[in-house]
Length: 462
Image (tube, rainbow, N blue to C red):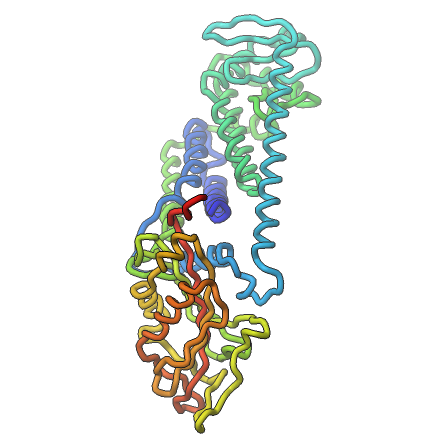
C-alpha cells in the first residue's frame, strides 16, 4: 500500500537526517558528506522493500504492525469504536496527499519554465567543455543548470573569474543531477519535514564543494567572502538551479576558515548501520506464522474482560497460494441492532457470561492462535476469484470445559468466507476455560477474522 510505504520511507528519512545532523554536518569532507546524504535518501527508498524473516516478533516490529494494521484494516473504525467508516478518513488523507503532490509538481514545473525562459534572454557564449554561458540583463544571482551558466551583465564585467569558477565546479561535480533527484523525492515525500531539511543540507554541501574549488584556484579568501556578501541580498533564486549566493552564507564563510576534519571522522557514518538494522527489524516478517492478531480489552456487551491485552504480532500469510493475510482480533465490536451479542443466558441452569475475571485462553496463547489460523484457514477459491475481502465477526461460547460451541456469524462478508470462518472456529481445540471467582464458567467470545488478499490475481474482467 502506497501510504504505508510512504510512512516507512518518511520514518527512515527522519532517522537518517537526525543521525547525519548529529555526526557529520559540521565536518569539512564535503564530497563524503554529499555521497552520504544521497546514499541515505536512496536507502530510505529501498529499505521498506527489503523483507527478512524472523523466528520471533521483535518489539519494534510489533509497533510497526500496530501502525500498519491501523492504516490498512478497512474497518479500523470498528476498533476505535468510531461512528464514521475509516475509508472516509483514508480517502481524505489520500486526497490531501495527492493534492500536495500536485502543488509541489506545479512549483517544480513553474521553476523549470522560468529558468528556461530566462536562459533564452540575453546573449550566449561558448565555454570549454560544452558549457554555454548566458549573459542576461537585470539584477540576477548567477546560477548553473547542467551545462548552462547564467550570469548578469554587471557580474560578467566585474567578477567573472570567481563566479565562473564557482559555477563551473557545480557543472563538473554534476550537482544538477542531485537537484533533480531532490525534486523527485520531495514530490513524493512533500509532507515530511526531513525531506526539506535533507534537501537544504545537500544544497549547502554543494556550495561548500563549489567554494572549495574556488579557493583551490588561488582566489583570495577575503576577496571571495566579500563577493559572497555583496551577492547575498536581493537576488532572484531558482529552486531547480545551483545558485551562487545560496542561503546560509554565514555557514559557508565559517566552513572556509575551518581546519580540515580528520578522515577518521568519516567512520561516524558507520552509525547508520544500526539504524538500517533497526529499520529492517521494523519491516521484518516472522517465520511460520499467519495472521496479524491484536487483542484489546473488550468493553461492550459482546465481550468484556479485565485481562491485560496481549502484545500484537505480525505474520506473513503462506497457507495458500493466493498469499492471503488473515487477521483475528478478540476485541470490542460495535454492531447494529441485528448483530447484538446475546445477553448473559442461563439455559438448563448453565449461565453463560459476557464478562469474567479471567477470559478463556487458546492453547499457546495469542501466538498459538495465530499459528492455528495460519495452518487452518483456507481462502475460499471463489472468494479469491471474485476478489472478496473483508472482516467476518463470529461469536461463540467457550464452555466451562473449554469446548467451543454455538458458533454464529454476527457480521457477514460473503457466504463462502463466512462458512470458512465458522469451519475453522468449530474445529478449534479446547481453550483454557474462563474463570469467575476461581471457578470455570461458560463465556461468550467474539473473534473478528479479516480476509485480505496480497498479490492475488484480480477477478476476470478487470
